[in-house]
Structure formats: C-alpha cells, structure tokens
Length: 359
Image 1 (cartoon, rainbow, N blue to C red):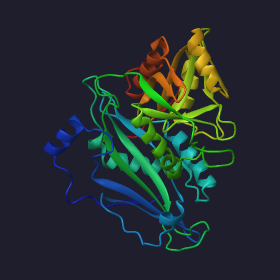
Image 2: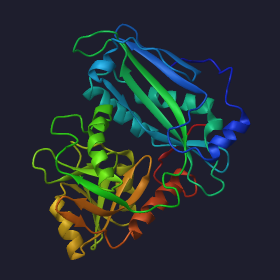
Image 3: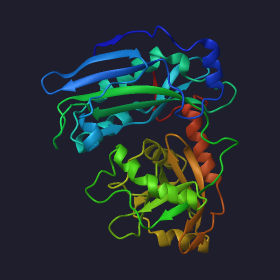
C-alpha cells in the first residue's frame, strides 16, 4: 500500500508531551498525526495518507450517521527498554476486523495492509509511545476504525468507506494498583442475540450496553455483566470485557463465542493458561453455576480481560436477588496478568511469537 505522509507543522512540543506522557489517562490525548484510506467499488482501497491530526468533515447524509455501518479495533503499542516499539498480536486484530467487516457488509482491508497502516502511523508518532523504564504499564493505544462515509439515504451497504487510525497514550488502567471490580447482573437487557452482531466489534454493541452500565453505576458497581438473549441463563460478557471462571480442581471455564466478542486478550489467556498447566474449556456457563460455585467453594476465582485493563479480578456480583460474594482468591488471576504484561512490555521472553516489532 502506498502511504503518503504530510508532517504536522505544529506538533506538540517536547515539554508538553513529557507532561502528557507522565499522566496520560485513557483516551483524552491524541498524537500529532492520523492515517486515512478511502474505498470505492471501482478503485478499491486508495489515497492512503498520514496527515496532521484534526477534525474530519462528513456530509449530514453520511450513511454511518443514519445506519451505524461502522467497526473498530483496539490494540496497544509498547516501548521496550532497548528503545524499540512493539505491538501485541496486530495480525489477530486485523483478522477480527476482517470478520467484523464481513458481518457489517463493509469492504475487507487485507490483514497485511491493516498491519502496514498501523506500523506506518506508530512509526511516524513513535515519540508518543510512553517509556516504562520506571516499571510502569503505560502504552500507546491504537484505534483503527472503518465507517460508511457515502452521502446516501438508503438502506444498503455504502459505496464509499473510510478507514482511519488514531493514537492515544494510555496510563495504567488501575490507579493505585489492581483491585477486584464489583459487577451488576443485568436481567432486563441483553448485549446481543443469536445471528446478531455480538461477535463483531461495532459501536452498536457498546451503545446497547450504556444504559445497563448506568444501572450498574447506580448500584455502586464498576461494570455490568450480561446473560444470553435466548434463555437468560448463561453468562456472556461484561460491557467491554470477556470473563473467566477458575475452579478448585485447576480447571478454567470461559463462555463460548458466537454471540460474544472474540477478544484478543481472551484468546491469549487460553494459550498462556494452557502453557502454565491449566485446562481451559470454552462452554456455556450458567449464572447459577456462579452462585453455587461460590457458595460451595468450588469456584475460587473469577476474572475479566480486555485490551484496556488486560486482566482484572472480579469480586462481588450484585443481583436483584442478592449479592454473590467475592471469590476466595485472586492468585492465578494475578499470575496470568503479570505473565501477559511482562511479555507485552518485553520483560519476559515471547515464547508465543505474539509481539510484532514496529520500529
């Protein structure tokens, strides 16, 4: 892919950037540049360009504004101690975007082109990748996204599509250390149903979680957990994270995919836990199995995972029928988390071949 670059005439100065990277937060600061590629049926993907970061112009009739034909990805770039920059499993994000594209009737950006685009922008703005030589967990969050940009009021796949990548430095997800999160069980709302878009990373799935998430906050909880849409029995995922359940015999269960997002961190944990000697099973997980497992002591740990938080232990589950107490332990949860973070930050050998060197 031919990518042209127009350097910003007003990049953030070094002093301000140092200030930002010292405490970046999440999703509030953006790098100096962005990448854009256009697609039309006759020309395919074309006009790949890196330009100064700034507002984009959309016609009021742009299809994405009316029919929500859009998808996105989330991944991170890491600064290793030798000065090199790496991303974590970008080809897996590329493949998931391919699947999301197919489900949303969007054109497919080939995985090699996806990775090339991400590499090009991260290389251009490599000074925005936070340094972790102080032992921290900062990173550069990478947000590729694709949307229907054709100006047309009609229910059909758009014939002008735009793919973009933007970058945002991210601090450690948990300020003051990792702590178990409290969940609210949503029994009135579901995230996705059979044949729906649950396995696609599209904004509509997240929009549907916002009201239940508000309910969770009102109940004093950090996150919401959804049950399946068919029977209302089986645990699916949180508003933005996958779940894992650890039993006293060393077995680990994670809800099967189909109506949930196939998380990159989720898939990595399956491999990592297996190498650590644990058997991971993907199957339906009944909410009553959660309740009974805690009551009997058989369920020893519950945790969630995702790109932003990596891995976080789950504590109390609050429901309309009463609270399910926190599991007894977080030991394996924290060992898995540390092992994964160490690979991402270059502090442990990457025996899985997950890391991709950008520059």
